[in-house]
Length: 543
Image 1 (cartoon, rainbow, N blue to C red):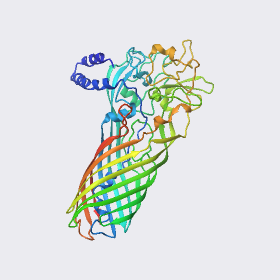
Image 2: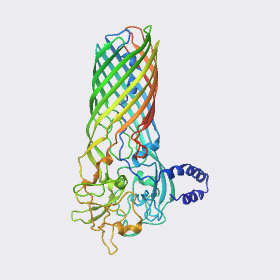
Image 3: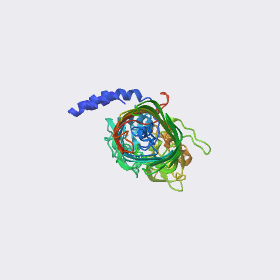
Image 4: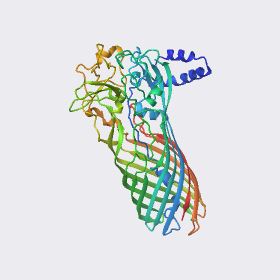
């Protein structure tokens, strides 16, 4: 970013708002300056932990109603309702997952001092002299009510639960515009035979709404940034049937068979960071383990115990729409790609050709074609929690740690790109000077684009060169393997706790804080999941 020009622009705003924005710019711009040298790359999709998968919330606050530690019962039951609010933090980590960088530079093809990592403004309907710096601020919010039922008889038990979830994901955009680029139209032949006036005035507007201009006949339909509508739905229904295989006066161990019925939302890729209820609509099947050990006991109403829950499942294939970037340097046998050359190619403008290889005078964002139906599956998901509980005359104090991990998604395409009908436009013209449409393509076009003076140098010598299915980068649309670490605590009180054959209502409050796992700092994107905190109330009745 040309920082001096930007400061002059905001200083020229003769208003209190201009002063405030100038102060904010001083706070933001050093952050941007520190990260702008990194190549941009990342993923087109993130599947976060399902709201139903939470061993910490499962264990805390109700464990006393499993097999009695001291005065055992033949059967036991409980029903709980757990309202919880969850909010993400560390937004830069989420932005790095998608872009490798929370701060982006946007510039047009006629900006002479374009940086090598600038995003080309022309692809989004912004003028050729447009220039701005963008700060991405992603956030995730969930509000839920988890309904859970437990029943046991002898050494056998059954439990099931299903949260009703309100989910809201968004990527807020703070943009400092250096040059709005609206005083200079796209020159003739570039977007249409005649000069075309830019139709959007900010990157924020372009990536949230899309635009139609010149021969660009379709707006951006997928991969949008911004604020999609919140969604409310029942997350997947999880159930388990288990058997206590070891029972001793000072503890017990059990195994269970568990599964889930998908009832949540299915990703549609309209937005880059879309709200998802559940696990992405996958059915699950796996095994689980519960165990408890008594560490200290006094008078049959004071205990310190340790609890362990571990669940491992396979997530079966589900049909979903995913957005993909391209692999460059492809031939019929193989493709070679480095992180920076194929990333973001989904936003490059693309010419459509007919069966005879002639340009149809329709140009569209490539993402409208590379959002394809695919089978998505996950080999392994693991959720394990260890908790220490202290009980005293009906009060229970729990503290513990939870680790959650999931392998990366596997993708099998169910749709293909139309054969020999798409060619990357890049910065090439759509019309010829002597009249008629131009078939010239730029098969190595990237998200960063090129200066307009390089138009002839970067054109395909044997145009048109088509973009076909083998160039689709499946890895770009697969959610990465993920790992999180969580610490949690809960305070709970149960009435009639040690009265035999009595219904025991209970009420508690809990807090959880979850941090993303990390790869080495020198690898980008280096964050693989969402950091979030949550607070819950847990109430119900046990017998």
